[in-house]
Amino acid sequence: MVWKLLRHHLSIPQLTGFFLANWVGMVIVLLSMQFYYDVLPVFTQGDSFIKKDFLIVSKKVSTLGTFVGKSSTFSEADCEELREQPFTKSVGAFLPARFRVSASLGIQGMNLATDMFFESVPDRFVDIRLDKWQFHPGEEEIPIIIPRSYLNLYNFGFAQSRHLPQVSEGVMGMMNLDVLLRGNGQAGRMKGHIVGFSNRLNTLLVPEAFLQWANATYGSGEEVRPSRLIVEVNNPTDDRIARYFRQKGYDTEGDKLDAGKTTWFLKLIVGIVLSVGLLISLLSFYILMLSIYLLLQKNTTKLENLLLMGYSPARVSFPYQCLTILLNAVVLVLSLGVVVVVRDYYLFAIGQMFPDLQGGMPWLAVVLGTVLSFFVTGMNCWIIRRRINRI
Image (cartoon, rainbow, N blue to C red; front, side, top):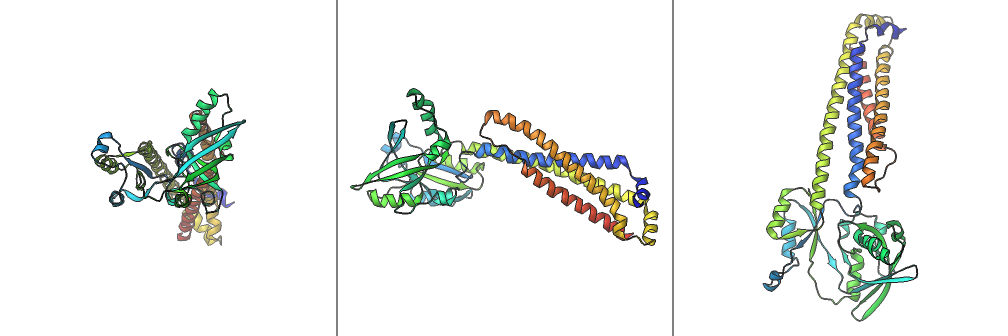
């Protein structure tokens, strides 16, 4: 009966305007965040075990530099100068193996053997589960990260020419390499376990603890300066990085600067779209509040009479609160429906170029939409109750 009494002054155009504005704003916010979450692995997949904001730095090698005594290794002064740059967060050195390494792998009765080399970086630069990236003296298994190009060379070159089966990354990760370590008049055999593949690292990476132990056991004992550094930076797109490296004659491996710029532009575009969606949502919130204020103003006499008759403010405000809850719930359901449809479309299109891209439920959109809907609904109900209390 209270609802029948108070609904006569409802403005359908105003509520429709709120509904459409809130729906559009919610779709933009949820879709932009879900799109960013889905597409970001395209720029980071394959090297997820290495911290994202890093660069691998080496000096340019030239014959003229060798003749004039210009070294291609980094001194402690070079490392310290690089640490002091404003764009640098931390600097680590690649530790090379000072002993001979060879490995073999048996496939279909054939024994594939080759000479290898090992390098390591400080563990803080490796973003992998610690239980997979540990070594203690006395253990027989070595965790290894290898370049993905090595696997491609085998699959699309060696395997096809020898009529051998191609090997996926998952199968390769289940195989063990027989690793032979030799040096300092000693030799030892261990098992190598591949725990990751890299698109940017052109090296065989092992834990730093293993390489320190192996160098002490099989190495020659001479100190070797690092020829490559791994540098964690605040922003890979900082133009000061390129200017400094050009001035010093440093090279960077891979396309990390280009990938960083692409990721930065992706964040910028998503941020702009997200800001537009939030602005539309704020405007829709304002439209709803304006509609409710006008509705309360038109029904002031009726509300005063209801309150004087003994109806509580909670009972009087309940119809308006139900209206906002219903509208926000419908907006959330329809917004999630649009996100699911659009997401299936762009995942299919991106999946044609990147088959490894994962799909699944859009949990980010569901959680974010539910949180935003609860927040907006709670604010609406609080403002309505506050307005009724003033009356």
